Length: 434
Image (cartoon, rainbow, N blue to C red):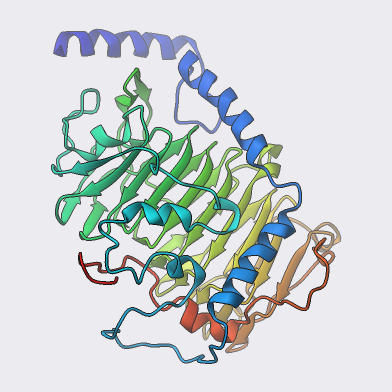
C-alpha cells in the first residue's frame, strides 16, 4: 500500500510540472474535479433566486412572527440558566423540544434565508463519530470524521462524546451531509480547515472551530471513488468553494491563520446564522476575486450572529453578489464592519452596530479601491439598524425591493440582543430542551 502511494505521488509531481493549476483553486488539473466543477455550476444556477428580495422578505416575516408580542431589548450578559427560551425563528423550529436527541433531523426543516431548503443528511442514516484521530488521508479509519464525510450516501453525522479533532490535512466533504455536534463539545482546532468544494446540501452545526493552520497538501481522499493531490491549504476555518445550499449554524470561530469563513467561486444559496466570532482579522470573505464575475450569482444570508471581541474587519467583505445582513450584533471592530468591491448588493437590516472608541473607525462600511463616482451606484442600504457610539452607515444606490409594501418591516436593531442571545454552540443534554 505504501509503495502504491509513493508511485501515485511521484506521478502527480511529474504531472504538475507539466500542467498548471486552476486559478484560485487548491485542486490541480484533474478530470474528476473538472466534471464536478461543471455539475456544480448547473446546481448553482438552479438554486439562484432571480428575485432575492422575496427571500429577504420571507426571513423578516419569520422574525416578526417569532417575536410577536416581545418588547424586551435588554441584552442578557449573564449566563442563562432558566428554561428553554426561543429568541429567533431558526431556533424556534427545533430548540425547545426535550426529545431533540431522538428528533435530530428536525433541524433539517429550520434553515432560513438563501440557504433555506438545505436539508443536509436528512434522507440518510446516522453515522456516529467515535474516533477523534486523523491519521490516514487516503484510507481514513472507520469511525473518524474524515471517514464519515466522504461517504457517497446522505449521512447525519453525530459524535459519541466530546472530542478535539486536529485535522492533518483539509477535510473534504461530499454531498448531502450534516455534521451535528449537539450533545457533545466538539472542537476542530490546531490543524487544517474544512473545505466544502463543488458539493451541495451541507449543514454544519454546533462546532467550535479555532486555531486553524495552513497545512501541507499531498494525497487526500475526497470521496469513496477518488483521491488526488492537493496543494497547501490556506488556514481558513471553513471554505465554501463552488458549492450550493450550505447552512452554517451555531458555530464558534476564532483565531484562524487566514479567514474564518470564505464563500467563493460561484457558491450560492448560503446561510450563516446563530454563530459567534471573535479574535480575528479577516472574518468573512464573500467572493475571492475581482476578476471572477461568476460570483454574480452568489446569494448569502448572514443572520443572528454575534461579532464579538478582537475582530478587525470583513464582517463580511463582499464582491459581485447579493448579501442580506440581518439582525446581527456588532459589538466590536477595529477598522470597519461591512465592506466590498465590484458592485455587490448589500442589504443591512435590523443590525446593532457599536462603533469602537477610535474616531477614525466609526464608519460601518468600506468600499475598497473604488472612487465614489463608481460606488455611488452600488446598492448598499440600511434599514432599521441601530447605530451606537457614533457608528454610521454610508448608503448608496437605490432602494432594493420588488416586494409590495405590506407594512412589514425588518425587526429593528433594538431587538438584536434577544435575537442573538444564544449565538454560538448550545449546550444540549438529551431528554432536556436545549
